[in-house]
Length: 379
Figure 1 (cartoon, rainbow, N blue to C red):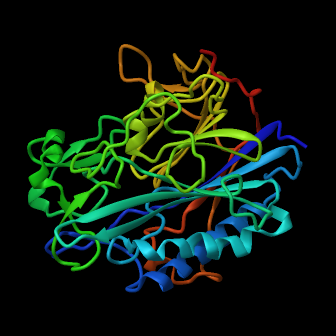
Figure 2: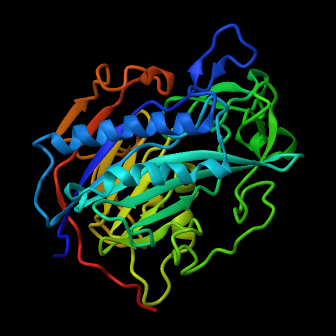
């Protein structure tokens, strides 16, 4: 039976570094000292969050409603800020043992992102990987399991020396934002693209984006254009895919601000996203970057907030259904209110949660919304 509606469920948990007063950097990454035990600990907490959501009566049981559970950016990393890249596959393998249960056959999961690195000797290639998995199945193909790479590294993604930073308010959400003293342009200078990632844990490394990115210091840049974001194998990191019969677009944080999906729209005959997903760690929905068809859903789960709205206009000229503020003052994208917000209590099931996160998190359950009929791009 095809899905006619989607119910969005956000696991909003603070995945940012913790303060470390009196230390050289003033912050520290939370997590275990070894990658694989850290992954298992975070997977356990993810399972507890999913179980809490699934057991709540606010979650609709209808088989015509696709339940979309999403966590924020930076959910998976250890005390070094990133895992060795070879350890990341353990995450999906571990969670699949749980999500393959029949009770999750009408669920789709976005497990936030995993941060990883490849040490080249002179620098570190950074991977920020969103992981998407369909519930109720053991299948491994792109219809059931895939990854999306983040393309752009933000100046706030990793811990840096305080001398590189000054505090300003974020132009997007108004929260304190750390930028190089020369402003946002400073981050584009190759000599300042350094941060704490991996080992050694007390020395900043030069950071390179994932190969194929258009970001500074990329080793190889992939072309953009119609059809370039459509995934084929589920392993290439593209942001447009079809799962559970629904067409999705996914951007991680800064990629959304840079309008990554809109830079590579569907080519003739391909479908526009019906649902636009944005896991983030310091980003809100940005109206000009919305990349879904008319009445498509736009769902953002951040470390500090969760938002759900719809595109009331066409793909080419997106207009969010909800706004905050009144012109001529600042106007930002608003949200449907959650039907229910559950403060997660991990005291009895994961008492060491504070080894991984700054808080236990909130489960935001939204009302089910109709999924618009799929619309193909016409040349």
